[in-house]
Length: 157
Image 1 (cartoon, helix red, strand yellow):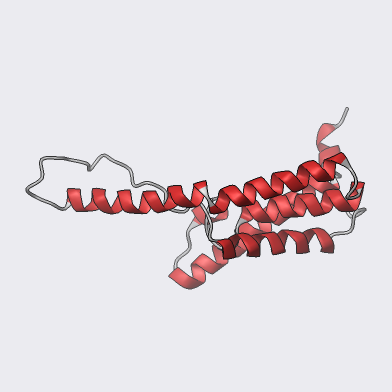
Image 2 (cartoon, rainbow, N blue to C red; image 1 turned 90 degrees about the horizontal axis):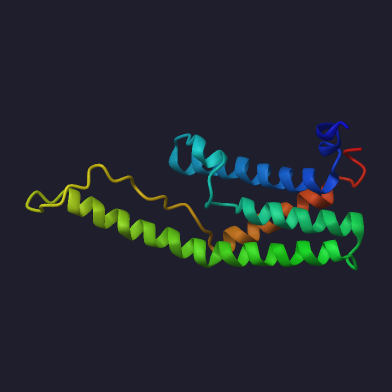
């Protein structure tokens, strides 16, 4: 039973992955333009503009709607999943990223205080790109919806 060829024909899965990949690529290009340096981590990392999580789940729920209809249980599950992921991106994950920024500043100041007895040189800097602003989530959602609308249902098989 050939599993992998069938995966490449799965419209819903492919559209969600293309939505995610598109957001990651745009995020990397925007980071390059703003910071004038390439950061490979932006190709797969969380946080930033646009939200790839939002792009993926919105592409998913639109693809499910197009293939199974808005009355289907699959659409209901995809819609609720999208709402939870986007809410979480703006809430808990964003707060964790803000906390990481503050903790990184504290560690930096402790490490630069020569009178301090703490040695935190072995500590790794916490990731600050975790969550999203509402604008980043909206842009990711619109990107995912656009991807799902532009790719025809029969495109992959």
